[in-house]
Length: 341
Ligand SMILES: *Cc1c(COP(=O)(O)O)cnc(C)c1O
Ligand code: SF4
Image (cartoon, helix red, strand yellow):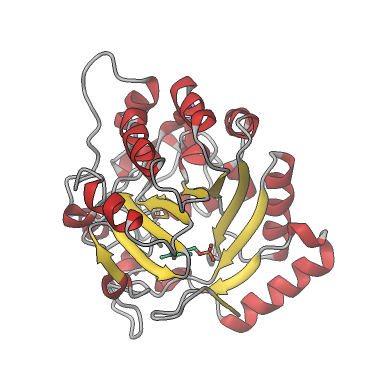
């Protein structure tokens, strides 16, 4: 989900034979002024910050920019990626390790916070940089499972029979090349106590080209039921390309869920939340979690107060089918699960 600025981010290969998605990845927009020019916006008066961009660089694929509204500085997709002055204002309570991942780490790239589940920080790279990201300051460079050649992660999972589900997270695990993913799952396939595989990824939404033949073939070959937890915060993040990618994922038998973060100025209205659930459902995705923002430094301007969050959630529940209502949760450092609000 979130890449740390100082890490040597994407190992995007530069040879000609690389898959198309990797080329699109490399071509992502990285200059805030270029992004604004593409949208017909003037940088003056938007509160844009070069300092924030230097700390956590802008990154957004062209296909995602194409879903932003031209000429609208309040566009909900733009707000998720544009570096702002507001990020540089220190706020009490907003810290560097907001969810206690530093403390929960049990081995290279593994977080064991929840019973039965091992969360693997596969890589720190992401195709998009979301300004509110809770892993914004996570020291990925030393701690990704892929960087350790998967060996330590696989050994730790193999040694603990209480783990029946492996969750690939990050960063975005699908920013790794498919053969690298296959290397991991080949090793995991030898562990008898694993029953489920889960992938937390934003890539099918932000760069749907990632769902290519190789990825689909890999998914279809896996020996476990697979759940893919996507991350979309606004209905406008879906388009025909995303729909097609999600169709292909579902055709492998994978279950598709979505997690969203409640974000001021992005989706903090009952209309926006309704549209998100309904648009996701139209694409074959059920809502899973609606997260209260993790209180990470630089994200305070996205925070929605708890009473507002609860009211929005209640209004959503009154409006849509029960299965279109995500669980409203907050992560609390040291807890053994997400805490319902
Ligand atoms: C959210 C989360 C999980 C998975 O929790 P579920 O409630 O099963 O979705 C596992 N590990 C970490 C570190 C998490 O943040
Ligand atoms: S894709 Fe996920 S991990 Fe990456 S920056 Fe966005 S929220 Fe964070």
